[in-house]
Image 1 (tube, rainbow, N blue to C red):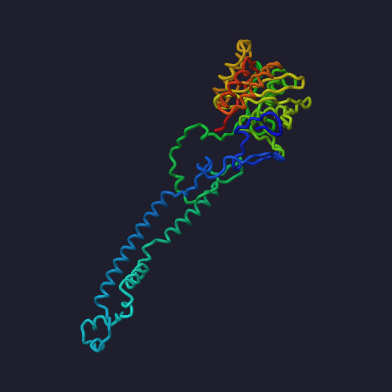
Image 2: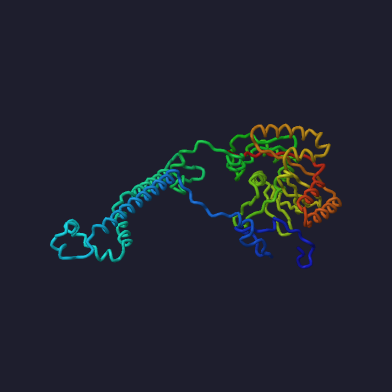
Length: 437
């Protein structure tokens, strides 16, 4: 997009607001409506909600259908028999013989004077008798059974919501029966098949341990101080080293506070993160006294530290993808130094470290610690960074902008350009996050 004579702006999936999205912290925006109508993918994939039936309901409905069919067959048979008999034996005209019961047929059927009805036709009499037989067979259909079943399920729903064993103390929330017609299905669940571990986890990430330089922190014990959300950290030694201005520790925490794509909800004052992992890392930095305070329209990030606010200008973001397994930010500090900060999987970051960093004691100690974290079932990340030369960044930034403006194969070209800058980095630490089951 070329807007009011400015330079070309690349547009991608991040610039599209999907249906149902909520726009916050925005006073106005310029937009173009695209991908609308019933032929779009989101409309084609949307399906109407199906009503769920329990096994008992399916069987009951089948039984009632059989009963109704049987009732209709019996009523039709009875009506047909009665119609034929009335045509044969009913009195169609009154005469003197019938009045004096001289005729034997008249003697038997004098009460069946249906001459008026038979004038309307035999089909009318057949339908009349069919309705009569259906009323006679009304008790065939167990209406009271359906009412009883619904009442029992309703009471079951109340008892389930009152069950103390199904009460969530953390959320202060009782069990709630959303569809009482499925109550009896609960007791029949024997196995749970899952195609991924995410189905069996709460998707709640808690920052537990990390390493900075040659030191690692986090005892794993229950914290004694109040913790922020997604943080469950305890280690008095870390806070002591932080007060002593440990350089490795401080730059690791600053890395946590700067290297992310989090935005702040101005109304609620809370962080909005694309993933709970990223939220846990930024909240951990805030817990340690280095708070990400927001980003203005000029991409200036403010970090509140114990020694005052520090500002970083966000220059570039190399976004995380499942292929890259890492994300990076390029920022400029108050001294006009340009830093590349990267976090990602240990195997991916190791391939992009400098020879000096690979042969350092920091890498050996971090590798040992991360292996220990992984054995405890924690999700681990490597933290790395390097200082960029101004000329190097300017040349790379121009190439990156050209890749983002590509119409065809944009993702591949952007990823290839990002690969060029994410090399020869220095490993500064690691993190360990627990994904609660």
